[in-house]
Length: 226
Image (cartoon, rainbow, N blue to C red):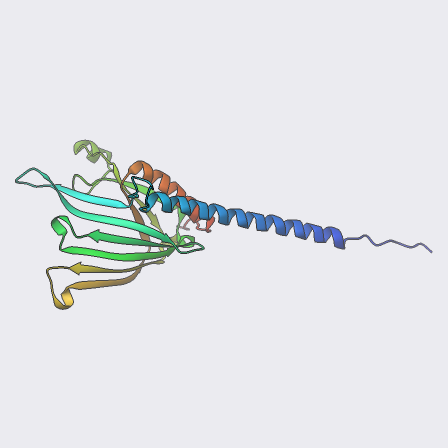
C-alpha cells in the first residue's frame, strides 16, 4: 500500500503570517516615529522656545500697519499671535490671540481651534502671501503686487477639511474693553472647515506647509472628492 506524506503547510504559513505581521508593525512604528519627529520640528520652530527659532520667539506672529494720513508715519493697527499644542495621535490645538495694542487695542480676542489632522485635505494646504505694512494686500494678484510695490514677506499657511465638512472647532472670546455689561464680551463656540497658521516669514512658511502636508498624509488625510 502506498502511503502519502502530507506536506507540512502549517509551519510555512505561520512563518508567512509572522513576517507579514512584523512588516506591518514596523511600518506602523516608522510612520508613528516620523509623525512625532515632524510635529516636534514644527513645535520647536513655530512655537516660542528658549534658544529656539527666530531668537526664541518662534514664527507665529502677525502685525498689521497703516500709514497715518496726517503724519505719514506707520502705525500698528493690530497684532496677532498663534501657537499650537500636540495632543497625541493626530490631534492639534491652535491657540490664537489678538494683542491689545495699536488702533484696535480696545478690541482683542483669544481662543482655540481644535482639530484632527485626519480631517484635513492635504491638497488644500497652501501659503498665502501678504504685505501687512500696506494695509491687508494679498499678493496673489501680480498686477497689484507691481502697482503697490508689495514686499510679500508676510504669510499664512491655509488649510481646509476634507470635502469642506465643518470639523474644526472654534472656542474663543472677544473682549470689547470700552463696553460694559453683556456687551463687554462675546463668546464663540462653532465648527468650521477652514483653518490657518499665521507665519511671520514666507520662506519658513513654505517649509512649515511642507511639514504640515506630510503629517496630514501620515494621519490618513485625503483629497476631497470635489
